[in-house]
Image 1 (cartoon, rainbow, N blue to C red):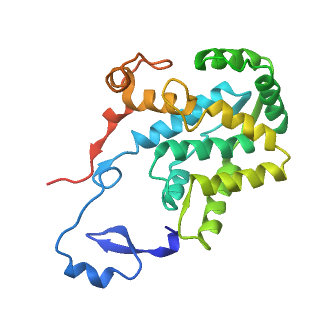
Image 2 (image 1 turned 45 degrees about the vertical axis):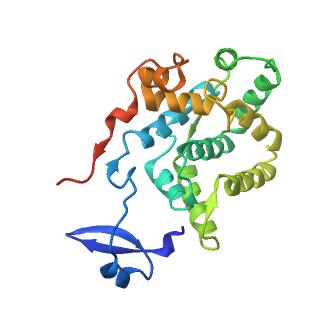
Amino acid sequence: MSESAYSALEINGRHVKIKEGIKESLANVDAIIFDCDGVLIDIRDSYNKAIHKTVEYIFSIMPVDVDGPITTDTQIDALRMCGGFNNDWDTTYVLSEWTFLNMPKECVKYFSDAMSNLEVSSSLTDMINFLSNSFRKNRCKMSLQEHRDKFIEMLRKLMKSKTYLDRYDIDTIMDMIAAEKELTNELRQFRKFLGYPGNFGECLLVTVFDELFYGAEGVEAVYNTKPFFFNGPGLFQNEKPLIKE
């Protein structure tokens, strides 16, 4: 939902967001059902970090060196306020698209040329190795501070006329931006590179995200296979309760 659909309510010196118009009704409720992630459990060092690290890994393969963080919690929160981003794969996907469309054009060309030479039947690991080797000499530097701010402003403007946005809505916006920048084919190639939506072991985005979140042991338990990229502990272990007795 849009930012304007909420108001701040102060409770014990802290502020919580509530939907406009329901404050008077709160005294008459019989029960409250809480969401878990982000409400009862602090997920900033688990789900949020998995989003950040997945995007970082994706762009570590690309022909670009980014100055500073690629994504921020503010961007993630802005997407969640749109109503249709409860799936963190979707959030990772949209943030990756936005970053790609704001890469320097010479970097986009390096990527596009390499993707054109990639064998169609390449496995996930073969694709990563091929692209990483292709970009060793051809790299660009970029800063994303201005583009991160523009992303949040774009969502705020969209939500002034909408009450709900999801990945498909944002994809349409990304298509329009790509067309304006004459990057329609390049965005199509980038989406192919991400492989999203797709299955673990086939889709780069899903595979990296789940390996980071579950860790090596978790991947073996969930998918009955060993991880492709990461062998460390899962970020889910960083979760901690927000509520105390």
